Image 1: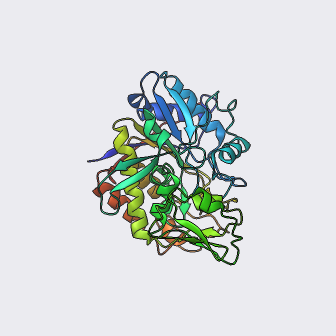
Image 2 (image 1 turned 45 degrees about the horizontal axis):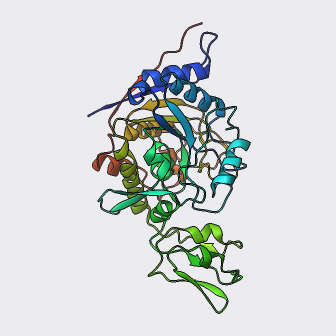
Image 3 (image 1 turned 90 degrees about the vertical axis):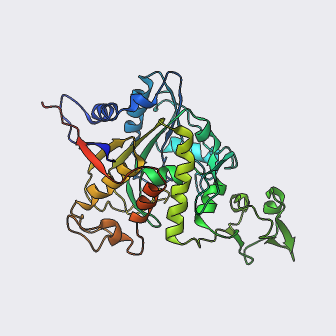
Length: 374
């Protein structure tokens, strides 16, 4: 089975500017087919960490919002809180960061920001998937409760998955804090005893009663720990750390199983957009952005999450690498840029596994949107 993936380049004319062209693209790709009047529609984006500059420009998100509103749906912007401690680890600082990065109520056509997993990352819904690695997955409740889901992803390199696009934006981005820890680690967090001050904040807020003070230092009982990661963001000294010990293949498979859990609740109610622009080598979760590895390519839209990521990777790999970036190998057109960045990451594994468990197909037909002439 082959999926249609619709593509627009970044050429604009006096007949049609880029936001207008974007609106035409997503209409051509069939966004109206997933929307009904009054549908509460989650637009899942990455607001960018404070200091990052590679995230999608707000002007484009505004146009996507306006296009969705043409069909009388009710959109809201959303993301889930981060596992690590940063400027998006709770809803208050997350929304502040979004506003600072240009995603304000007024600039987004009076569209609200609703963080998917609540104030502190604990508002989650347990979804049964019964897959190889996960029996259940933990998803931000506002994503599950929405009528429709539109993923808008910035396609770029990523340290663990090779690249980050639609599948990472959904699988990792919609998971609650517990879900994110589940994908990244096989064991409970660890306490750095040298910096622990024995304040007992982690103990007070542990819902499982798995933490206690021992010789004025916090101690985690791994048998009781439920992996909610609340202690990580509660610690005032950063002494509770994630065990980043998950193997890459299992991490990729778990992320696809989380996709499955999210998408199964939205049958025929999902739509995917990838911006292949400012193609940075690392995630937008960083507080800085390194130079793009190739020139801007364009924007893709599809109803198949696997096909759109496969097409995005292919389009990037068809480019010639830009000089002077962190990418030092696989520089020529047709060479694998993501393998050049992360040679030990088999990024294709996630696409193979996603296809195997029925999320979508790697086979696609690229439909190019014509530029309106002058």
